[in-house]
Image (cartoon, rainbow, N blue to C red; front, side, top):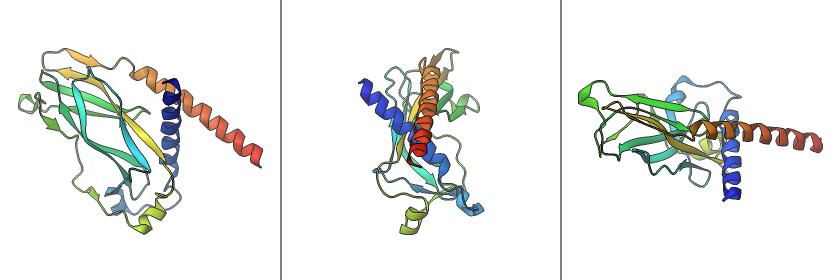
Length: 193
């Protein structure tokens, strides 16, 4: 189990590094900022952190790649699998991006069994992954990484809440792993020179 966690940590850190590095050496066409391709599953995967006590679950989860920037973006909807109406929630990737939702009045509570999406931009579109885009976005070869998603906080209508107690520790762990892997990569490159 410990080695599986170590492997997943390394893959997540590599994913984060690849995410920020790809596509930043050229000018971005404004139209491309709203175009996405679906990440091939043999190159990148969304990983859902097991949280059996969490009242929310991710559904219709996939990874998208922004055509303009090359950044990886998780795409998902959220289902209330609990028994109480929800007024607000926060979900996150284990490496630090967070997304929140809040009901805009009592008619918009997330009721048990219901599914919602986070705020979407009507200009966003998914475009086909062509050979040209595969080359430009470097979407070829072996697995590039994963993005782990988890529920951080849920606020119920009655004022009670769910909080993921391991979220801060997980963030610190990935931050430490990123530093260790960056150092290892730096020294490995220095030895090759």
